[in-house]
Structure formats: structure tokens, C-alpha cells
Amino acid sequence: MRLPLVLSTGILIFLGLNIPPVMSQNSVQIVQAQKSNNLNSRRLRLNRNLWNRQNISSYKYTLSKSCFCTPEARGPVVILVRNGKTISITSVATGKPANPEFFQNYNTIPKLFDVIQDAIDRKASSLNVQYNQKLGYPTQINIDYNSQIADEELYLTIENFKKL
Image (cartoon, rainbow, N blue to C red; front, side, top):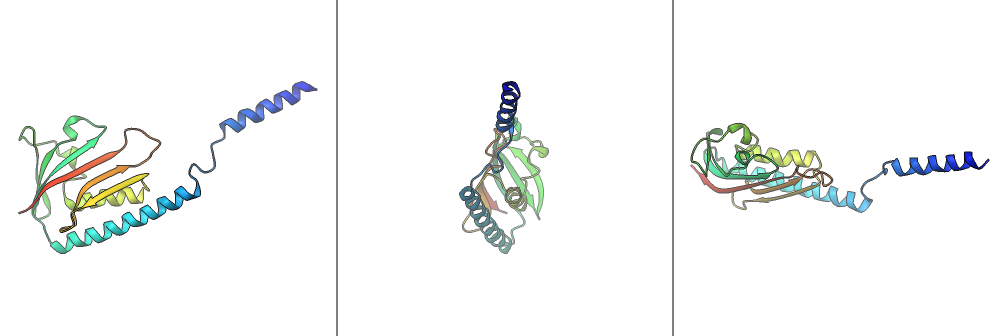
């Protein structure tokens, strides 16, 4: 009589330990994340509009990327844009052309805005963006897509912006 009771108890304990929690975040964290997402959306919209009003189509900037990736993909690189099209991506260290595939998502200011929008849409665990107050372009983009995963964070620094 005791064996079925012991087996039943053991099975229930085993199942209880292996059932994932229904919610991984408490309601306060969810509300905070929604507020942060709304604030990031408003800031993005405001600064993208500010950038668009400048009507700058030819410019250059230095981009550095910190990520769990190869050194060649980190930069820093100088990105040259003329009439809205990327003309060149040059390694600061070597002065030679960098592999454009490593920087294809970051090679214009509008694409940088798209990276921010993507993080908002994907409900990144953490998104911190700094913008140039005068022109609206992002100067720092820090994204942690999932706080439970290591090495998927992305940190972009945009410096030395110059209108051409």
C-alpha cells in the first residue's frame, strides 16, 4: 500500500520540479518594460524626425561595434555615405577597405534607426540609446536582446560625424 503512495509522491515532485514557471517576470517588471519600450519608441520617433528634417544625405562617421564577434567585425571603421548610399567602409586601424558584410546593418544613419526599431519590436531586455541633440542621429546604441542569454548583446558607438 505504501509503494503506490511513495511512487505517486515521487512522480508529483519530479513533475513539479520540471514544469517551467508560468511567468518569468513579475507584473512590476512587465509594466516597467512596457514603459521603457514606450519611452524608447517616443525617443526614436522624435530623433528620427529631427534627423529627417536636417535633410543630410552625404556624411561620414566612425562606427565601433562591441559584440561577441570577430575583431574585423568590430571596427572602428569610417563609413562614407553620399546621396544616401554607402560609398566606402574603411578600417581605422589599417586604412584599407573593411568587409562590408560585417557592417551592412549599420552603414547609414537610417539603418541605425532601424536597428533601434528592431530592438523595440523584439522587446529587447535592455535598450539604451543616446542621440545627438542637434541632429538626432544615435551616438550610442546598447542592446541586450535577452538577459538570460550571454554573448548576444550589441553595443554600437557612432563618433566623428561630419556632414559633407
